[in-house]
Amino acid sequence: MLRVSPATDEIRMSTEAPALAHCDTGISGLDQILGGGFPANALYLIQGDPGVGKTTLALQFLLAGTSKGKACLYVTFSETRQELLAVARSHGWSLDSIGVLELSNFAQQLTAEAESTLFDPADIELHDVTKIVFDEVERLKPARVAIDSMSELRLLSQSALRYRRQILSVKQFLGAHGCTTILLDDLTTAQSKDDRQLESVCHGVIALRLDELPYTAERRQLTVRKIRGSDFLGGPHDYVIETGGIKVFPRIATRGRPRDFAREPVTSGVEGLDALLGGGLDRGTSNLLMGPSGTGKSSLAITYAYVSLMRGERVALFIFDENLDLYLAKATSFGIDLRPFVVSELLYVQRSDPKELSPGQFAHSLLHLVEQNDVRMVIVDSLNGYSKAMQDTKMLDLQLHGMLSYLGQLGVVTIVVFAQSGFVNEFRSSMDLTYLADTVLILRHFEAGGAIRQAISVAKKRTGVHESTIREFKVTANGLSVGKPLLQFRGVLTGVPILEPGSGNMEDQEK
Image 1: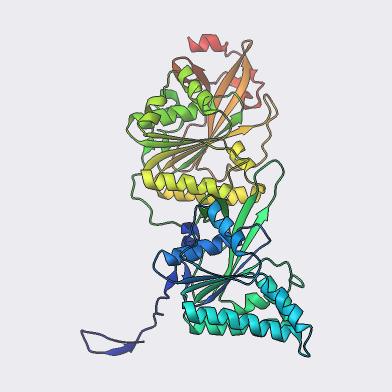
Image 2: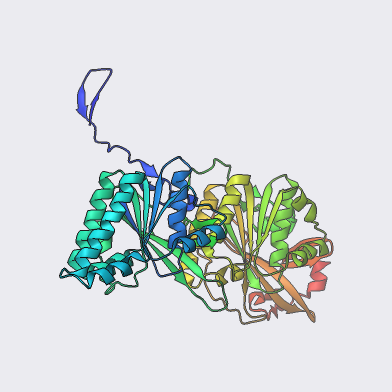
């Protein structure tokens, strides 16, 4: 491409490739993955086992075309028109604007006729089927075409060579007529996993997968294997099929531009805690509250939320382990009423069931909420419940790392609660995520004076100095309190402290 510089009249060759026109898929998450949709006038393969949503995706793609006034054609070998209409009705769609070419019974009729001839039945059937499809394209002049499914054409071809020639013929004809085409393949007639005829011919390949897990809802993932001449977001992406169609949740990657924010400390309003943290939790950081059940982790997170809400900042609270009413009642028990903030929509509360919510769906809803509502603090309570949605701990590490990094770029204070198993002396964790957090607070039970008490300490803080002391931590009807450093004990973090000689007792020092 030649360009002329207006200042010097110099003629130079542009190295920039012309931008490709894209056809939106009708699925916002998939369009984001594909960088705007499918590059136009090309052939794409949608493959996956029966039931993964190939037909639904194809119908959404065609309906997106008709919404822009484009003619669209659905060629069906495997389903009848009535079956196709039933799928559309389940999503509340009308297919009146889409041309439907039904060939589900055509192959059977051709086979019967071919048996009385001297020619190879495959040659007769392929020729007639191709002619019918091409004639319909000539008549309708569609901008978008979906062919369902390629398994039928594979059976009609009867040989790999004839099948490849047929695909090339379809590709060349539809490309010459300006069609953007998707081919659906359920892989039921593929001879082996190495059967790559379709993948090699098509401009792009999208694989859909359905995993059935015990005691949870099924999990669906989409992977873009290739798109020629266009960038795309690789890797697996969660998706769901709901009334209204497919929703895709792109995996977490760099999104947009970071916000400008001052990395200032966010105080808790609890004097001893702010001193322990060297001023507070800093904006744009991830903070892990870890310890066994009952040490006050959720109470500490609620206190931070309340102080931020009182400053007029929006807070998002994601609960996995408890009933929402019980959670709000817990806050009320130590003097914090969060309900007015929920009513005013300053506090967004979402109760999530890890059995029903995929990890990608959760991450998408969290980030969307933060971006659309200028949320300044995010609390996840707890990571244990969130981890149940992830079947692979390594995947949890990667997704959590991406989510925390992106929230940090937005200046969000992220607080993650993590419950360790065990009560006293023995603490076990199913995962080690302390390296991901910028700040780690450790809460513990310990025994002293014939009573169970709680202690708090800061294990690390990347963004500044902090105390290395261990302080007593209390949750009372009047709120939280953090006492003086427990100098008279050693072994507090083990749960069985030893009183140092000559140090007196805790009651004396509290006085």
